[in-house]
Image (tube, rainbow, N blue to C red; front, side, top):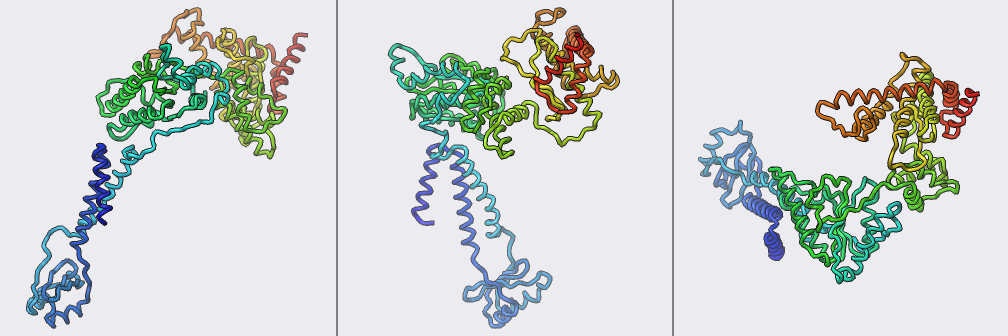
Amino acid sequence: MGARPVTNFFKQTRELLRRRKAIAAAAVLVLIAAIGAITGSQLLAEPVVEISYSQFSKDLAAGKVQRVLVDEGGFSVETAEGQKAFVRLPSGLLNADYLDRAAAAGAHVDFVKPGIDPTGVASLLVPLVLIGVVLALLAVQTDFNPVSRWPRVVRALPDRFEHVAGQDEPKAELQEVIAFLRDSEAFTKVGARIPRGLLMVGPPGTGKTLIAKALAGEAGVSFLAVSGSDFSAPLIGIAKSRVSKLFQQARKRAPCLIFIDEIDAIGRKRGGGGSAADREFEGTLNQLLVEMDGFNTTAGVIVIGATNRVDVLDPALLRPGRFDRQVHIGLPDISGREAILNVHSRNVRLSTGADLRSIAQGTPGFSGADLGNLLNEAAIFAAREGADEISPDHLEAARNKIIMGLERRSLVITSEERRLVAVHEAGHAVCACLTPGSDKVHSATIIPHGQALGLVMRLPENDRHCIPVEKLEADLIVAMGGRAAEEVVFGPKKVTTGAASDIAHATDLVRRMVTEWGMSPAIGMVRVVRSSEGLPPEVEREIRRIIDEMYEAAKACIQQNRHALDSLVEALLERETIDGEEVRRIVTIKEARMAA
């Protein structure tokens, strides 16, 4: 090593120590010690030439051998000129005669004394070097490197509010934040204070991150994006320093937005645990609280947090002056879903017959991410068939795959099981068509999808936010229709396990009706909480009573419309999949004939 590299090396070490980078400094010191020890061991271990025993005998007879050092596996020889050599001789052949002969020739004979071999020292220092390298890499990875590029800073984001569909209310609420970031003096001169933190709350996939990026793009400010897990670190104190560094970078780039995704990873309620991990977590959260309450809002720094679990956040994080405003990003309604589909359809080729309104109507509860995935699946179906455009059939197949699961046409079932599945699904369809309050049947199929051997899909005409008792009872009758049809057609001893998911769905729905929604006259409008021993016996009996009534209603519907059931079964066996209009036509015709 030259003088200049050594000087620079120690200069960097002093810089790390000055910054109190303990692990980085420890790594440097370990490497220095290891390199120095290895260098010293290499200097101590001079190169030795190995000679044959015959050459040794000639040198010994000529009086050239001055010293003989007996070692394991042979002996070292030193001549009068100071040259060293090693003679290999198995220990079994090395006896006193050789040693007496060497001593008689005038050589000094000695034995290797127990101690540390310099070459052994070098081999032991190899793990030490590896430890030093690992510590140095760990120091860089855990943000000890002064030139670390964390957090990620993005300027001039291309995202705008026009790229965010189905969230009109959140976008309207964020307009004042855009105005503040563009011109803060208009607010401060009248004494207005913009919220220091905005908390975006909503289910996964609703576009919280996209809205935050669009907000920065509309305001034309810098965007610092981190996640709650970015603050976790294996060493004490690193997470706290990262929080401090994040806000330092934000103040330098003001006006800017700090976006913390999945903030519940860092902002959970403090539990007062005594472990080192709990203390580290609380210290990190305290640093975040101090930073949010410490900087001046006129500096143009606004923190945006995103979570779908606001209930686990610490109350101190939600008080005025920190995250004092919540923006709810909910699932889109039917108009919002259509708008989202229109945005995603810009990147795909749709045929003229594709009706996005129909797809939006048939995807209640879908988030923006779900709708984007639906169009992507439709494009994959079109590519598999070699089509140039996405047709309505591709959109329908993509929706069925997401809702019902992938078709399993390769599943082999017997003719008896196939008829049983047709009877089961026809029972659902007949009850759905003839029960007031039920959603309209969209399609019925006996093709296996996912874990189901058949399926009847019902789609609501409009989004519902308040569900009446009539609708809940209709859903229960439809759920029981499959088992009721099996019993009516094949008898009580021939019913199968195919109704397991229907029974689970019905039980859960009735339990909520009784314990949460106050829809049981016997229990009344009270909330019943499950204890460790389960629900009270009277609640269990009420749940059983309601389910039995709905099952009897479903069985009566099947018995009274047996001709419609049989016709629908034959149609399913022949065509495997029937759309909703055809199902309603078959049921209506048979019902009219029976009435006549």
